Image (cartoon, rainbow, N blue to C red; front, side, top):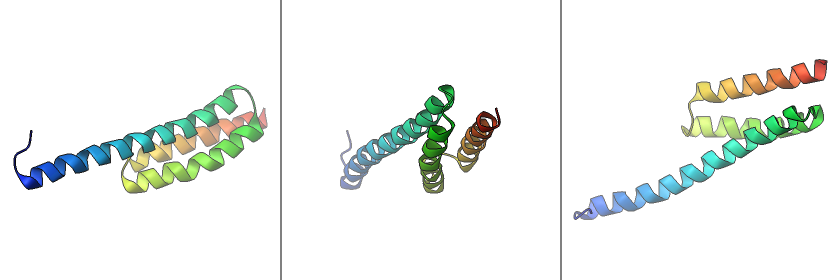
Length: 89
């Protein structure tokens, strides 16, 4: 356990940040899963709506550094490609 005052403060801050990051990461995963669930059930309109809510979440967390910007871009690209393929079929 930390003895120095600044180290104690840092330990508290780390706990708060970890909790926030875990919550946000969970929110992100849930948003992506909703899109995938709609895609797997062949629901093009549901997938489009879910993607419309997931896209800004991906962008926001990539900008904040929660996930890498390329990971966000990869998710958006793959999900959008699957939605377009579903609409075309």
